[in-house]
Amino acid sequence: MPKFLTKHVITILIVILAIAGFSALLASPFDKTEEVSLSKLVEEINNGSVTQIRVEGNNLKIILEDETKQLSRKEAESSLTESLVNYGVNPEKLGAVNMELKREGGMAYWAGAILPFMLPFLIIGLFLWFMLRSAQRGTSQAFTFAKAKAKLFGPQGKKQDVTFKDVANAVEAKSELLEIVEFLKRPKKFLDMGATIPRGVLLMGAPGTGKTLLARAVSGEAEVPFFSISGSEFVEMFVGVGAARVRDLFETAKKSAPAIIFIDEIDAVGRLRGAGLGGGNDEREQTLNQILSEMDGFERQTNVIVIAATNRPDVLDPALLRPGRFDRRVVIDEPDIKAREEILKIHAKDKPLVKNADLHVVAQRTPGFSGADLASVMNEAAILAAGNNQKTITQNDILISIEKVLLGPERRSHVYSKREKEIAAYHEAGHALVVHSLPHTDPVHKISIISRGKAAGYTLKLPLEDKHFRTKTEFVEELAVMLGGYAAEKGVFNELTTGASSDLQKASDLARKMVMQYGMSDKLGPVTFGDREELVFLGKELGEQKNYSEGTAQEIDKEVSKFIASALKTAQKIIKERKEKLQQIAEVLVKKETIDKKEFEELMAT
Ligand code: ADP
Ligand code: MG
Ligand code: ZN
Image (cartoon, rainbow, N blue to C red; front, top):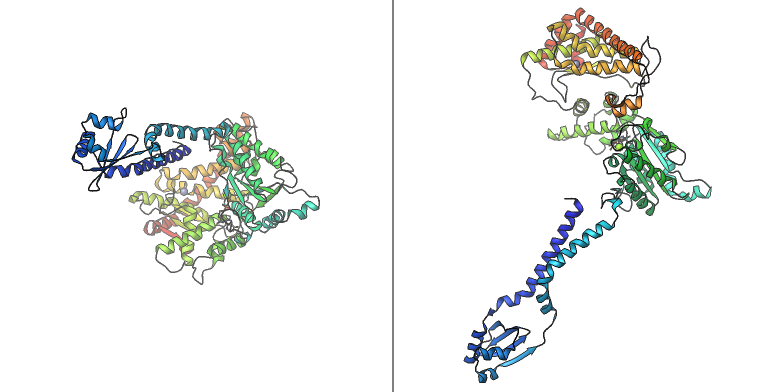
């Protein structure tokens, strides 16, 4: 049952209960007194024990000599005296009884008489009324589904307590957004100068870099209400509902201007129109058009600023980026080492950290982590410390949490047979040995055969510093590392297991990217192949747009195979040449299950 119906049914039930309770209340005085038949009454009159009879309609209220009260009913079609005579009353005795005639009527009487008949009609009427009222809101809005679930923070609603202070680093983004805050706070200054208030700001950045956080901080700084909605919410709706929601959202926001409308994940609705196949594309298009026309409809002085966030700016419809729409763009970079330290500091603020904890080291160990990842590292560390009943969070707790965030929790319960353990050990030793033997790889940080997340074992290598771009040499060596596990299994056991399959998949993907996107194939040269948008958006199988011939496709496949084959050769050569080392690492792994950086370096030095 839809939510609104449930709600109404509950209302109706309450009404029924209230009516029932009310009539029970009316009836209650009657319950307490004894009810007697007319013949009994006549008997009592003849005895002379009745002092008074009060007639209220057909009800008779009898008071006896000893003050007890009784009730009775006369026959409706005849008068009381007539009835009593029929029952053989003694007229003399009747004359002695004080007869009191009360006019029919009174609220209680009518309610008592009519309510039982009216109740069903009342219930049906109420139900119809609720239904009609809902339906009147318009079919286009499909009951209440279309009401944008915009959340109201800010001064009017829940106080928006995030400010720029809570966002570490992102200096450029903040300074750009500071201007937006100014517009919201002192629009007059800009309007007097003849400027138009900007309508849209697009925040671009990888997932978890703090886009949502920044948008909220703008509202917190400007102290204006914050209406937020997510693009992905539109996608799951019926056709037309999304557009109605947008209309609703903008209306509400305009009423409480100055305000911020935040559209999260706008790429979900703002994808290149006409791209893609079916699947709610119409809905997206309608929603997008509605957003655009609402933004176009702003008056010059409308003080509502739309902030949108996306991690896929490349797939956005150009119409969104036109002047007067999202013409301000703010790029949020992944945090570098300094930024990471600052983010860690923010998330350490309300946590009891040991005094000598060094967040700089943590920042060093977390290249490639987003703000969200770092927040989750600190949180995991706190959970770990609390679980161990510690008073403070130690450096070690944080370091353990880094791995947990990177690889998922350890699954120590996963039990290997002896042979499986051996194979896993040689597999990981293969990766590690290849890493150690090649000059352009990141150093081994940890090797383990404790299964973790989805991986059965892992060889973790971490870069020493942040990297902004990668070289072909690095990729070629990376491929060899990926195939190191496979090469070790094959070299030692002359057998292959399914354990290497995800390595092989990763290697093929990387090799294909090198050929098709990075132009790293000598033979095909600096050309990119395939429509990248389609590649990511719909998945290859569905809609890769081939902008190359069948012949080229074969060339690409050949080049990809060549990269893989040469990487495998490299890996196999290393494993053959340093077989004792491989064995040494594997044996330690079987015994200890994990080898950390220091142990590994000592092992390799001997
Ligand atoms: P996005 O919207 O870009 O995916 P969010 O804004 O939802 O990312 O960020 C997720 C969480 O990560 C935030 O709630 C915050 O705890 C943390 N975070 C991200 N970036 C920062 C930052 N620069 N400073 C502090 N915390 C951050
Ligand atoms: Mg977000
Ligand atoms: Zn592997």
